Image (cartoon, rainbow, N blue to C red; front, side, top):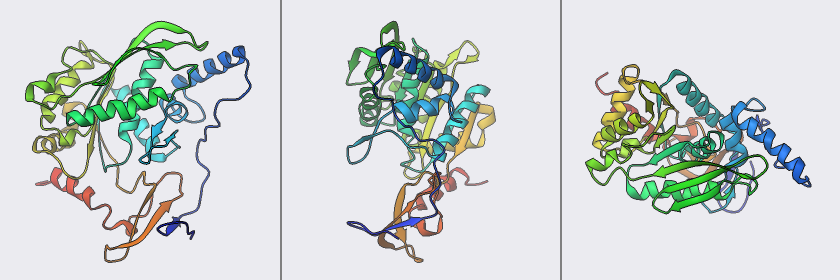
Length: 333
């Protein structure tokens, strides 16, 4: 047990070395050496490295995220991220969309709202990514606080040249090669509201893309319409270009959202959707400590296991929302 300023912190479990720790860009390289180094990195973004898939390596080494207190960090390796990325790759291989059922705070918006769009843009120049959420303000927040922050945090050597950007959610970027020169291949990332009215659910209808992320689908008032509209954007005739990623959190949901959650859960095969459930105990960095009656003790439990999993018992009150969604989806079954 260790104590610091503020609430008592309880360290739970024995530390294990993480699967991967990024050591950063070497210092003191010549321009020729740096160009060679970036070429190696760009290959790793596609082929993977150190047991990580290409997307995961890119995410851990290039995508800076903003913490709640405002500081910028690179993500650390977590088992839950690797699990989600493995499922995303499998959905891609099978030509399926993917719907992820989880608690709030897992980090899907950073991964699929910033990491994947930039990864697609930089490994598949000329590509287009689509982003939306359950309301206008969350869509703008997804673009400005996830994607734009991650873009600005890229190393200047490989950060694509911004050709245009609108605060409402439009970014065109000219991808650079390993020498730091622009290639003339522009990628686009679009974030549009799909929630103000029923017709707005089809705001992406004319687009063709190789990535789409609908955040907080279960809160969307027009969940069915926006799902079907965006699914069509990732089709080339009868070929599936890439998965649409649907993120849905346990807790408060819209009427249409819970219907979609239940529909995809029960009819995944018929709807060509890979459904993934993340238990609430996974991906937890720290959480309030509860007594045997479910009352907060005033301290926090911090997991130092690299998979970010903590025991369920101390979190009797913390995870109550998880059962809400599952109960609603499985009613009558």
